[in-house]
Amino acid sequence: MTIDILQSEWDARFPGSGSRLELFFSPGRVNLIGEHTDYNGGYVFPCALSFGTYLLARKIDEPVIRMATTNFDFTADIPIVSNYQKIGEEWVNYPLGVINEFAQRGCSITGLELLYSGNIPNKSGLSSSASIELVTAVALNHFFNTGFSRIDLVKIGRAAENRFVGVNCGIMDQFAVGMGKKDHAIFLKCDTLDFELVPIKLDGFKLVIANTNKSRGLADSKYNERVAECQAAVKMLSAGNPISLLAEMNLADFLANEHFITDEVIKRRARHVISENDRTFEAVEVLKEGNLIRFGQLMNDSHDSLRDDYEVTGIELDTLVAESRKIPGVIGSRMTGAGFGGCTVSLVKDEAIDRMIQEVGKNYLEKTGLKAEFYVAEIGDGAGVIG
Ligand code: GLA
Image (cartoon, rainbow, N blue to C red):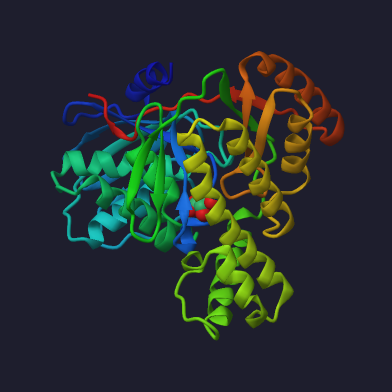
């Protein structure tokens, strides 16, 4: 469907000539547990989704990069230079940041026409930004034979977001959308990038994503504030025990050293990160043993810690989670992604899914005035060339 839209819009938008048209795809992602641990060097456990961003593209002979999307009106024609500049807060900054990273690495990028179309709900915390970054990186690598490895492309995507867009995100999202595998989640240690693909077999259960439809207002500035708070915690904790990243400590180490943190807010931020890291490690172990009940409890604990200690949830996410947990057969429910709006992910018995969607949807609407949307997650493959 998205591909049909792209093809039918291509001629109207790019009537000139160029090389053969090629199609690329990159998924969105949902993180099952391990939130706000990535930029602290900790564990995360995300998987790629079956929906994402398509890119239809070709090389052209003119020295210009033309960008358009079927999702927004804004388009850009950008002359080829060696150092690109951010354009306001427009969507093109994500692909442009990636093009800039290629240019900074000495790759000679020539004229291109790029038409994007995404089916990830925008600002939903399902990584539409990492998805557009990676689909662009895969396409550039393909067109200009730059020979970057998959991990290089993941790092390029993150660098674009950190240095061009200005969000100090960790590597989880780009890694998940770049390295995802159908029916698997990625158990990733974010400081070393060691990872394991873990099969997701949920006999009798499914992962249900619920979108609050609350767009993540001040998310970027609040996100950067949390990153800075974690750095402050590292500095204070280092007075007792030198560390460079919070995830170097487990909860027992933290409890023995927490008195070095003099600020109560910073202490709570650190407690979330360190306890979440321990939870993520345990969650993967229990999942491998088939203990879904414990996995679900850890999802619940994760949300509660993000709500109380990290303070990145808000009324909409908390309401969806609280309503979901009331439904018999929902054995775990938590926010996923950066927070401040966006989506929840819940582990739900097959026979409880319809009731959950109906009752949670109704109660959420009554309590917040917003209409939630629900998707049963299908775990797909990472970014690639379609043809
Ligand atoms: C956003 C960031 C990620 C990660 C999550 C929170 O999705 O892009 O790097 O920090 O928030 O876990």
